[in-house]
Image (cartoon, rainbow over all chains, first blue to last red; front, side):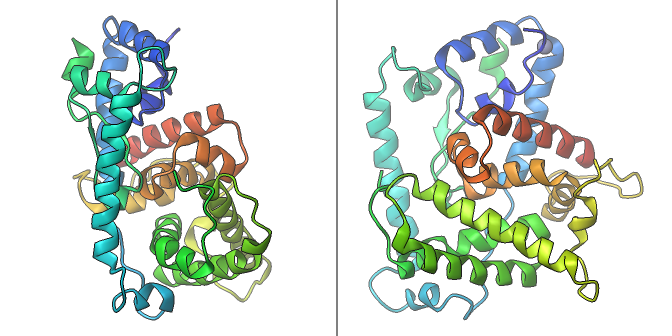
Length: 137
Length: 167
Ligand SMILES: [Zn+2]
């Protein structure tokens, strides 16, 4: 390939297949321009994901306000969701086999120190790669 | 996943209301517009749930959401008396980084929001669905009705343009 291009964002989002990851790593090891770009894109990605999750204006969605009272409180829901995400990540990490075409979370964990984001503001768990040094070795 | 479990309208409102609001807010930078959109989307969900076929609920919901957003912008566009949302003017214009605005720190949320609003709509939508809503590329592709490769390209180009705006 010429340059890594959108493989970079797809990698940061955990959307690359194993062959694509290998392809990207091979390129990054010999291309300073793409190595710099992945760091810059990672910075931007983090900045957008750091935007605060705004509260719904009170009264806009009564069904959402109502949960302040009954069984499923807002925070309780997110705590439950976070716990479910943790369980899911563990389960996926255990299930993903080396032959899987999808991204191998355990491999990312071991190689790049990847972790799943548990901040509900970011929605479903995503593999994020906080330390790019491993990629650039 | 719970994709195939049918949700009631109340559950959709409770679980997704805040996400829909944040989606609309980050696309428009305007809380009133975002609030209007939440109500419109929930109305459409209420009408559409009866006919919903089990499948990708996220793709279905966010397709409704983004279509409602686009319809709302078009509707306002047709009414000369209504003030246009700021970003509408930019839809057909490939934006250039605004030289008159100084961005010193990438970590400031206001700067990030401004930079988002400078993106062409397709890029902004893809970035918001990925980084704010938290959809997978596959889900974004379903919501926007474009191939996954297009989603990947839009997200990356959007981020690169954001980076230009923020430095
Ligand atoms: Zn390169």
